[in-house]
Length: 474
Ligand SMILES: *[C@@H]1O[C@H](CO)[C@@H](O)[C@H](O)[C@H]1NC(C)=O
Ligand SMILES: *[C@@H]1O[C@H](CO)[C@@H](O)[C@H](O)[C@H]1NC(C)=O
Ligand SMILES: *[C@@H]1O[C@H](CO)[C@@H](O)[C@H](O)[C@H]1NC(C)=O
Ligand SMILES: *[C@@H]1O[C@H](CO)[C@@H](O)[C@H](O)[C@H]1NC(C)=O
Ligand SMILES: *[C@@H]1O[C@H](CO)[C@@H](O)[C@H](O)[C@H]1NC(C)=O
Ligand SMILES: *[C@@H]1O[C@H](CO)[C@@H](O)[C@H](O)[C@H]1NC(C)=O
Ligand SMILES: *[C@@H]1O[C@H](CO)[C@@H](O)[C@H](O)[C@H]1NC(C)=O
Ligand SMILES: *[C@@H]1O[C@H](CO)[C@@H](O)[C@H](O)[C@H]1NC(C)=O
Ligand SMILES: *[C@@H]1O[C@H](CO)[C@@H](O)[C@H](O)[C@H]1NC(C)=O
Ligand SMILES: *[C@@H]1O[C@H](CO)[C@@H](O)[C@H](O)[C@H]1NC(C)=O
Image (cartoon, rainbow, N blue to C red; front, side):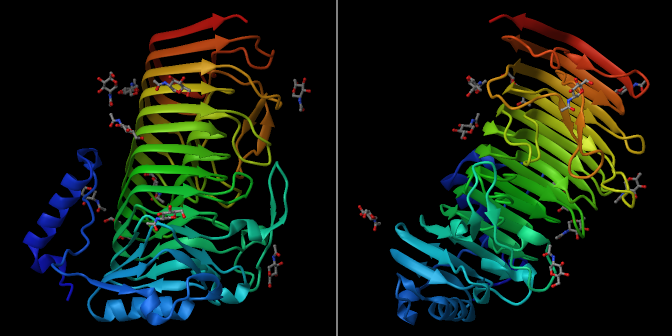
């Protein structure tokens, strides 16, 4: 039987020790404890084929898979094994103590019919754990949402997707199933697995505590809207490390809908996205605090590091360090205007509150981008105590998309016609810039030829130490 952690301090400690030694010491974090899935001397292993799964990719294996999970949790937990094969399934519910081991050459395919998913729209996942503890997914194989089957019309700018708006609980084309969800769960671990082609969001944490996501990859279609990588809602103590995300929409996206989000660390990862690589918000009704992002490479993305605070939640104590960013323009139907760094707080609409953003640090950042940094508080909620240290910006244009817009979306002032700048700033109280180097390459269009754009009436207490701006010709 899996026993509660508090009865077994030694077991817990030894498991954490194993995690540290087997993986890498870089996973330690000042904020986050590592989750501890129960170790046991002889974990139960149950194969889905023992319960009649065909693995032929044609027949639904839902019942055998669910029966294997139910049998595994009933014995106190262990592994449910998917040997090489193709497993087509409707929603499966992961239960406490169970780790899915999807082996190399095994792929779990989500069904593409509305009846493959539960009635309630917020439970539409291919794999979901609800109120579970000590759960995980691993094994070297793949979980695939068959996202391309949900495309109504292919379009290189942005595909048009189906909408399963049965209950009215979701808007228009956002009515599609997510791939993997952990809801109100504790001690979650996802590693050595590939999550592919979600129809909507890929990996979703909701009100979880103690989650460890590492050494895994996410692949989503570059033209599918809402193909987010990892969405972390209202969750505490999340560690993400050594992940590779290549997807259409926001790659790592903490949000607050019903409660705060504390202690998130994401390190040693690689990201490519047609939207924001890292985005806080835009759902931001509660606090975000103690988030750390370190050693991340962002390529070919529409926006690098983004804070899109719109609903009154306050943000503080966020550090971005050792990050290399390349951002470029894409079709403007995607939010983002090639900003390497984008920090905004404004009320979403007339009924929204304005959250504050304070104590942000950007250190050791290198960017090559088609647009500059945008820092914008709003009249009712300021940005304060923002620091840039050791930052190199290389500014050049290489796509033919139009520039000269400031993007406040979602909500607020929308897309506004305004010349671009190396740093565009408004409504800030306390900004320290130290060792910042801007290099401007090639011919600049008239509307992007300004290192700093701010007004002293709205930007107060700004200090520039060793700030350089150099121009390089053709
Ligand atoms: C955040 O991490 C710190 C340091 O590990 C810990 O003391 C604190 O309890 C954590 N916060 C939450 C909400 O778990
Ligand atoms: C996976 O499939 C490849 C190609 O068919 C094969 O070479 C390899 O041995 C298989 N690996 C496993 C673990 O089944
Ligand atoms: C979704 O369905 C509800 C009720 O079924 C309907 O009122 C609403 O207009 C639909 N919305 C969209 C965007 O299709
Ligand atoms: C996260 O921590 C905060 C502060 O302790 C707490 O209010 C909230 O309920 C926690 N959330 C979860 C999902 O445990
Ligand atoms: C940064 O992350 C990469 C993996 O993306 C890793 O290979 C490298 O060792 C990390 N660097 C440091 C200093 O930890
Ligand atoms: C944000 O901070 C302000 C000022 O301290 C406070 O009045 C407000 O309640 C906070 N908002 C939330 C959602 O906690
Ligand atoms: C950052 O990425 C660019 C483009 O991929 C590369 O040329 C540069 O060497 C990288 N810089 C650092 C500091 O890693
Ligand atoms: C920034 O880079 C310098 C030089 O490479 C290094 O000494 C320092 O530890 C880095 N700072 C952080 C916060 O990683
Ligand atoms: C934006 O404003 C500038 C200067 O007022 C003007 O020349 C340009 O045509 C405008 N662009 C658009 C797309 O409205
Ligand atoms: C200016 O801002 C810095 C932090 O960026 C803060 O330490 C300092 O107290 C502020 N000074 C004034 C006069 O507000």
